[in-house]
Image (cartoon, rainbow, N blue to C red; front, side):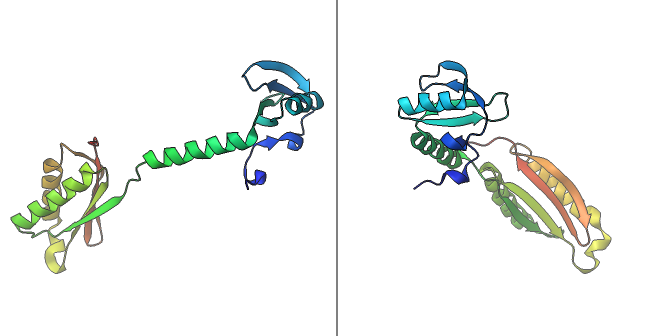
Length: 176
């Protein structure tokens, strides 16, 4: 059973305005009526009086089957949630002295993430004395950006946080 209190729509006797603008089940305006007249119209049609726009003066009410209306509304919400894509941030870790083959593997991995529509965070961790040469990590990040330029754009430029150099790439266009 559906609980009417969970919605922001007021139905039938919950409507407190003395006068309301009424729209019938066919979508035709009946004009501004008192709440008693509107309730009588709804009762004659064996339907519910639902306040659809509470902010206007007077509030707008529709004569509809409230159960069917809520069912259709939840069905539409469920359908829209199915088509949404939740963007995830995938992390790819590299080091400043990464070998060429490992670097290419990481790039292919990142390209796959970007083509699926996810964002990719690149982290370059400096160990020990490597932090004395952050330009090596910045060159690495520049190579990454150049290689992934067709499928991505830089969302957060490379920044040094402690011993980590991080950057975030976002996908440009998703392939279906």
